[in-house]
Length: 482
Ligand code: ADP
Ligand code: MG
Image (tube, rainbow, N blue to C red):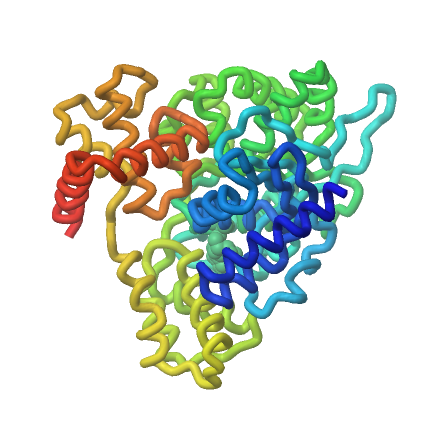
């Protein structure tokens, strides 16, 4: 009954969505979604991966919100349920454009616009049952992330060779932990998962490997505490031979999680188990994190990933195209390699965009003029060097307050307002995710950022004073970044 209702409701939503976005995007992002249930005005939809959920939230949040309000009413809410992918190819087969593969975490549910009560749904790695020895752990690895697909360059040579050394001899090397840091889309997830995949391939069931993001770790920990299963949680992690925690910076500000992680880290390290961590910044630059953890992060090898130079970018493009079974003229690779200099994900994005456009417009030959035309906007975005720091500085300058204040937790009205505007502009003017914006504003979570953005949007609707303020600040930021 609730499923039928969900079906009908989702169909109505799809009608509206279809009118609002282009067909290819509709087909790629909305057709594969399955309605699950409609209860208490909450429509639950199932999306194929965590990446999918993030993408929808990043790109279609407003449209989804207004569609749900139209179809269900103002009380309507949308809840996501992320499918657990057993085989890596399950959804790729019926898609016309190959999207970058992302790791898929255990099934959990998300709701917008807030996270009232965290509900992780089914946990993929049920904690160890006392009395039983080690049980098979699902490693959460994406089999596409392998060394063979990780192109070597000066930008990643040290990190890559340390990663290979670890994969050959997990736990028994001097790189424990391996701490890899670098900006978005530079290969941290790919490289750390390659280690896991190689160990899995060479050691089979002999080693239990677990890959997860520090957010999943935090959420599972919170869930375990709520259910009085904290000790099972600790026990479970202590049975892992190779623990890979991606984006460890997100434990910033989470004291209890840090403490738990500290103890798990010590036990694993003492037992000669391998620990691999990634972060978007060096250990010392992670805010709100215990000193003793920072010191442990530096026990093994700390190394960064840089943006590849031109030749490596070219080689990566060639490989990506070959992986997708296509050939481009070398001029196109040169053009992309020259113009995309800030992340490898953007290099991939450029190829995907070319493919998507050519299939949508039935163009057989992708030539340089077409590539230039299609990628024009992406290049513009790539050129802007506006970051959250710059935005915070300008906003605070404008209001005459100390920049650190918007990064702290103070609730003074004038600071709250400046902070909300800075968050709004960060979303508008940078490519940062809601998550990373939250982190750079004193470790707030992404629902706070959404709240700030909505508040500013509401104000902009009916106050010309606010419109002027935002316009002024935005103009100043743009001028400064030319
Ligand atoms: P991060 O975790 O640092 O944000 P990812 O590991 O997700 O970055 O990498 C972004 C994309 O770029 C992925 O699709 C990945 O496969 C690709 N990539 C990153 N580094 C390389 C590399 N050295 N060679 C080939 N592909 C790469
Ligand atoms: Mg990553």
